[in-house]
Amino acid sequence: MNSVGIITIHDIYNYGSILQAYATQKVITELGYRAEIIDYKYPNPFHGRQPSLKNKIFSKTNALLKDLLPEKKYTTYVNRYKSFTKKHYKLSENSYPSVQSLMDNPPEYDIYLAGSDQIWRPKFIKGDPCFFLDFVKERKKIAYASSFGCTSIPHEYKAKYARYLKTFSAIGVRELPGIEIIKELTEKEAQLVLDPTLLLTDQQWTEVMEPSSNNKPYILCYGNTTPDKYMEKLALHIQKQTGLKIIRVNGKFYDYFNDKMEYVLDAGPAEWLGLFSNASIILGQSFHATAFAVNFKKPVVPILRGDENHDSRQKHLLNLLKLQHRAVNVGDEFPKVDANLFNVDYNNPTEILKIERMKSINFLKEALKMQSIKF
Image 1 (cartoon, rainbow, N blue to C red):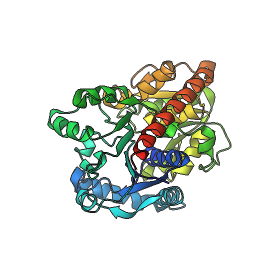
Image 2 (cartoon, rainbow, N blue to C red):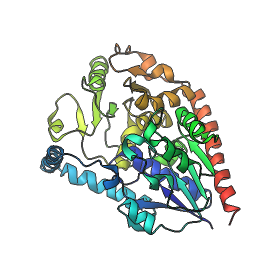
Image 3 (cartoon, rainbow, N blue to C red):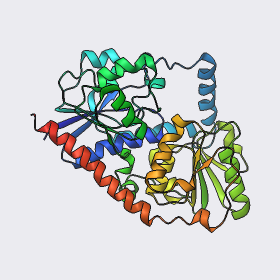
């Protein structure tokens, strides 16, 4: 059985990152390979993303205050993340806290895979060679659903990106701009594929979720808030006309005392899935909120911020599934609260998703197979 080493963003407090890493490993395992996630830590000093002293103090204070709340919200949140990854990840034997540690002592696999998540985003990754598998000298590298998280590469990174990308045997990206970037930098033809979370069916996700204990219908909000709190205001607008309770995932310690909506401060990845599976309607201000909403066939209102680097992922998915009419932009007049808001015909989108899922899995299958033949 050939082994596959996966490098991705897998060890941060972000639901999408954790779940895409799990899905990538699971699909590769189901294709008959021994898959491991290379335990490369991000962020590390290479990325220069050290919070300011002010932010460190605020973050620590927020965590301490959350632990004064019932059930020690912050500790519960952290432990639930750890529990999920311990149960569902298969990690490399060694952990790599820096670029140099991985370059000096790389793990041995038959095949190496980079993806998915925004592992090639210049703003955050800073051209990190590890996410381009530069520690692998032989040509046995493939990429699946790797994302640039932007529509163009800054000039200072172009030569480096071109050199790295030319070493891949097969490249799958999850957004249309990624195909254009690959073509511009390498003249290679990249394949458009689904985010790994969409390779698993809703039934497969229910097998790893923690069912929600909320028995009453609710509006679920997820994604970083905007200065005008458009998503929260939209939720209150829908609540006013429907009477539905509002559940907002994540927040600061003081949000626990909000009397207009319930802030869930301690959901791990399994609990997050349960909240999505049980929601009556989902307001999603993130790609993975939209992805899981459509996978669970839930009424969804994707919220776009007007930033193409942020919005392109949601737009592509919605266009692909013919659901672009569901989206609103921050600042738009609120959509009409009627039957059309809650009744989504998922027959056609589900069939499209099924076809795209098969195409994406076949791409991955063939890319891995071609590498396997070399051994």
